[in-house]
Amino acid sequence: MHLSCPSWSFGTQHVTGYLPLEGALRVVAALGFDACEIGFGHLQPALIAARPQREADRVRRVLDETGLELCDLFPWFATRHTIPPFTCRNCSVNVPDSQARREVLELFDAVVRFARAVGSPGITVSSGPVYPELGREGSFDASRTALAEMVARAHAAGVQLSIEPHLEPPTDSPETTLQMVQEVPGLQVTLDYSHFVAVGRPTPDGDVLIPHARRVDARQARRGKVQCRLEEGEIDFEHVVTALTRAGYRGTISTEYVCVDYQGCNDLDVVTETLKMKRHIEGLLRKTFPVGVVAP
Image (cartoon, one colour):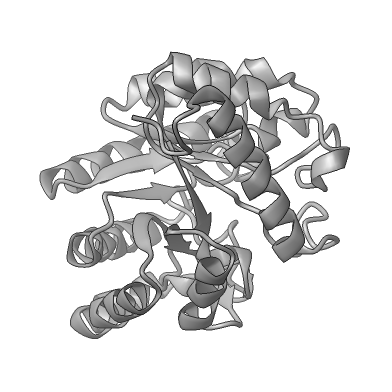
């Protein structure tokens, strides 16, 4: 296991970027990380589709300058049919409009090629929200159809695909997420315990997804609060690291603190909490692997 930090911890508001990627990754490197993820406002699928070589060259250049390893991409898909403001709700894979969903797949193809060009082993997407006009079951079915096609396209290019369960999608619990990965062979999980703990689930409830985990996010949360300071949280990260170790997990643990206008995730110092979580996880990894932080 090794630690990473996402670009969108710094200077993004949902799918809009304020601090350019170059600045965000310099912050990541300055905080002592050697690996990162790129996404949200720092990853624009429409730009990638329009000028693939230019965008790939730009990202490779900043990765080379910072010395960071790229572990994952997390795009959101604004199509020609998306009405601003662009948010996680209207840039999803299961949008009700069929033409928009076709355009999402076209943009996804561009992101897959981009992943190959910049050396990302995988892509994370949201399964999308529950749309009132589709209902929970219809939204789940639309997500499953889109994700099955995405898995096929990604795997054909040698790229992995995972979904991150969170508070609003049809995959908002360990059970519904497990159902999705079982119904979409090859689909993996970006596992973030904070979304489960925030609705009152105990930490171990998320363990059922560990066998399917490609990336694990680390930030503290408590009932009613999907992001909080380290000392205020209820997630037992010692349990998480132990469970990951027992399952043979050898992927990334990403310190995913954010400052966005979503579920109260704009009321703490992201830099400070990122460093606190980094040191906390490093300590747990040293305890688990006394010879060093990086697991064999």
